[in-house]
Length: 88
Image 1 (cartoon, one colour):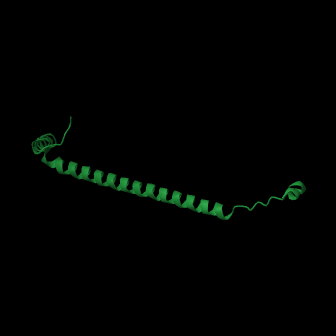
Image 2 (cartoon, one colour):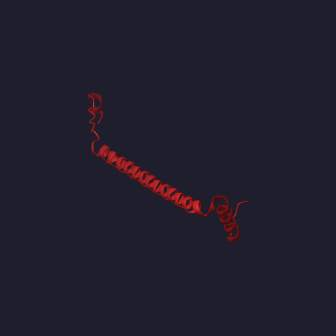
């Protein structure tokens, strides 16, 4: 339904914005939109880094805990009862 915006549509949108907001407000609006987009991009990048760090920490924790469990497994010695000793 809403495909790519062509050159004619873009010119029409810019002309309407110029008529509605005027030549003085248009640069201010563009500047504030640019700052908002930059801030949004910075926040999403920071969020992605935070999530990837969390995943890395979880992987390291699970690897360390499984290694620790393998090293700290108690050795269980089963003593044979007299009847089992005689059968063996």
